[in-house]
Length: 139
Image (cartoon, rainbow, N blue to C red):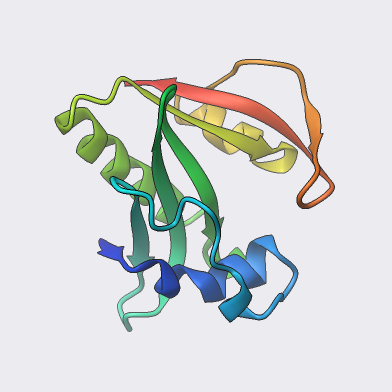
């Protein structure tokens, strides 16, 4: 597996399948995808297929991780960890001190194993109607 920077469009198919229940990938352009300083990372398997994606958006509170998705067929293989490790390395080099996200509740344990902490009470995200918790990683 290798981590590469990609255009937002290359994240859409996995976003659709994992995060949005199969919504047409062309409908998955989100606010923030093209904000100055935003970058998108993907993990490619040996065939070049995208198996994990994440979008990193600069904000006043640090960099926000949005739309992280790992193909269920490779969850537990290290693809998600590799993606976040590459992002953290890049953000630290750029002087960013905080990475944050609103994590879906089933993913909270994954982030905690990587050193993230829950920073507030849970809530139901209006966009997808699923429970989330705010989390952060201090860099």
